[in-house]
Each structure stands twice: as structure tokens, then as C-alpha cells.
Image (cartoon, rainbow, N blue to C red; front, side, top):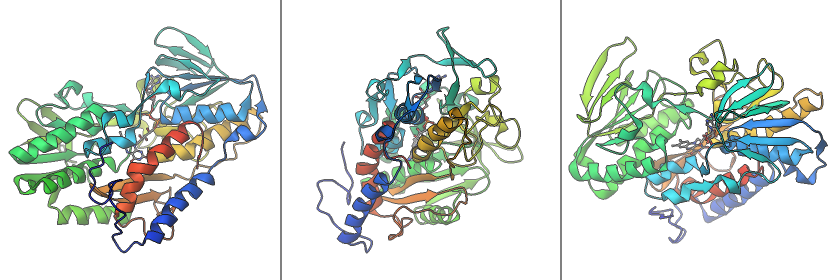
Length: 454
Ligand SMILES: Cc1cc2nc3c(=O)[nH]c(=O)nc-3n(C[C@H](O)[C@H](O)[C@H](O)COP(=O)(O)OP(=O)(O)OC[C@H]3O[C@@H](n4cnc5c(N)ncnc54)[C@H](O)[C@@H]3O)c2cc1C
């Protein structure tokens, strides 16, 4: 890790800013430990429920691994299989820090073999189809897996192809960037920001017309790039434009206001009702569409793309997707938004980004799903009603510059639910930056082992 942060470097002396005392910081680190410790206890200490149930977990990312680990701890004798094609585990919340030049690619990359829980089978393949009536999963390699219970945790499909003229291979070249595409692309974003500073020009940042994972990440990408240029002394060479659909920049009113204020202070223009429709990468031209369908083509030197997002096609093809309402188009998994049990199939549960809840889609949300989903599955397995309730918990450290962040936490009410009530978490501070850089990653990897769930 190359911590280039001014205030937050691990080597820098503990310089207290923003009126926060050393005592506050100690309370914070102590509080974090306490907050972790009061989460769901590792279930291994409890007697496991005896069962011969066959449980298939689709997807072995943040949610799939967490759920599998907790199920393994809760149950005795179950046959649990995780279907996950990739050897590599991506710590996606670290990708913004790669774009900031703070983390390296290797800081956010791990091997799945270290996190598939012992005693759980790993089917290294893609799910191709599910028949929820006959309770069978088919993999791309042609295998059939019968199940008694199914957990769907395959995350999100990034629909770059829905943007006219854009191919994934274009990302990282000719000023076209997207930190959502992967850690290498996040590193390219950092490099292209340096190049933009040297050459000057117009930088554009986009938001699609769909739900997205970590809704704060596009804001972070913008403010990190702006700060990198400011620190390098090149800020006056670049015009910043943030293209957003109509409405709020952030779902929590206070942070919507805060981001607007920061954009105003730092000269980031907000282009409202402007959704990316197409790109011509060679010509560095982008076409945006407004709510009435009017198109406008503009030049750019640097374009950060956040693609439209939806569930993978097989979810809809299996008849597991939400069928009505504003989320139907994305084919998200239809679940009860509190129990995370499927709306039509009681032996099917969801976890992570794939579910059709109104908010969520963060790794912090997975900390909550990681106990709600397995615990409710075990209740149903015992012929009981699901007991656990997901409250919509969503969180991310909203990076406002390299070295500062606000710690945003909220639930279905869209009101703040701060973990550290003794400090105003919404005030950007070096403390939340340090939390993001040094503490959240170990918490995340513990979560994958079923520990410190919310
Ligand atoms: C740039 C960025 C910044 C972020 N910042 C934050 C942050 O600051 N804080 C925060 O809390 N969250 C953040 N997130 C969000 C967080 O990473 C996700 O919410 C979290 O990873 C969701 O977990 P998941 O298991 O649902 O999806 P994933 O972790 O994406 O895992 C899905 C898994 O399903 C597998 N899969 C896909 N298709 C199939 C198939 N057909 N068959 C079998 N397996 C399949 C994939 O290989 C993958 O392993 C960020 C995300 C990004 C991209």
C-alpha cells in the first residue's frame, strides 16, 4: 500500500484536525472494535442444527462467501456448495483507493481458495440456468446440482454494452476510464488523471439511469480526480462536469446538500438530466440524452463511465426476478425486503447486490445480509418463520479528497444511523479516511469468514 495521504499517512504523526481530539480518535478505534464485537457472534460456539439439506450458494463474492461461512457454522451435516467461476476475489471497496494512488492492484486482490469455507464444496463454474420448480441448478459446464435451499448472490451485471459505441476494451485508453470495471482500470483512471493534468482539457463523470452499487463511488471518483489535480498544481487546466439523471445526487438529503456544496466550492459543474447514451472513443466524443429524449454530443478529454447496472440475465430467465414496479426492468431478484426470502419460492433466498431492495448494494450491506439471510434460511429449514429483519443498512466512507472522508450510514428511512454517535460522522475528516484505508479492509475479510456480521 502506498499511503500518499497528507493527514492520514500511517507514518505521519497523529495530527488532529477538525477539532477532533486524540481521545475522540481512541474512542473511534475502540468503538470500531466494540462495534465489530457486538455483531453476530461466530456461530461455531453454538450447537449446529443437524440436517442433511443440500444448499447451493450461487456466486462466491462478498455475499456468497459470507453467507456460506455462516451457514457452515450454523449447520451440522448440511451439504453446502458455492458456485463461483473466478479464482480471484476482488475487494471492490478498495478500487476507489487504487484510483487515488493509495492502494496498489495487489492490495485489492485475493485468492478465493483462501476464503471458501472449509467443509464447503466449490463448483468452479458459472450458473447458466435455475429451475426453481424442480430445484435444480445447471452450470455453464453442463453439470446439474439438485438443491433443497438456494441462495442467490451473483451480484451485478455491468452493462457497458448498453452504451452505444463502447466496448470494455476501450476502458483505459484515450481518456476513457471506469473504476467499476476492475482494479487495473482503477489504476488506469489514476494514470489518466495525471495525464489530464499535464495536458489539460474537459473531464466528464457520468451516472446511469439505473440502481448502481456503491452509489457514492461516482462522487468519490470525481472528487479524488479533482483533488489529485489540485495537489499537482494542475487544477486550473481542467473543466469538471458531473452528468447526472434528474433528481438527487445522493439519496440522503444531508449528503446531497453536502456534495452539491463541495462541487460548488471546487468548480465541478452539475449537468442535470444528462445520461450517457453513446461514445466515440477515438474522437473522444460523448452523447448524452435528457428526460425528453433530446441528444447532445460533446467533446471530452477524460470520461469516467459508470455503466447501467442490472442483474444477470439468468435470474429473469429462471422466473426469479421482480416482475412489477420500477425495478422490474433490471431483473433484480424478487425478495421480501426485510427477510430476504424470495417472494415466490420460500426455499430461495438472496444476498448482496442482486436483490431488489430499494437501497443497499454496498459491502457494508452484506455485513447485514450475512446474518439475516443464513439465519432466516435456517429458520425455514426448521419449519419456523424467518426471524431476522434487514433494516436497509447501507454505508460507505464518502471520500471528499485524498486524506478526508465522511462516514455515511443510513437505512430504509434514509435517516442517518451512525455507529459512532459521539462524533458527527457526516463531517469530512481525516479519521474516516484512516478508517477506510486501514480498518475496513480487515473487517471485510473477517466478514467473508462469517465474523463480525451486523
Ligand atoms: C468502485 C466500487 C467501489 C465500491 N465502494 C464501496 C464502499 O466504499 N463501501 C462498500 O460497502 N461497498 C462498496 N462497493 C460495493 C461492494 O463491493 C459490493 O456491494 C459488494 O461486493 C456486493 O457483494 P456481492 O457478493 O453481491 O457481489 P460481488 O462481490 O460482485 O460478487 C458477485 C460474485 O458472483 C459471481 N458471479 C457472477 N456471475 C455468476 C454466475 N453466472 N455464476 C456464478 N457466479 C457468478 C462473480 O464472479 C462474483 O464473485 C464498491 C463497489 C465498486 C465497484
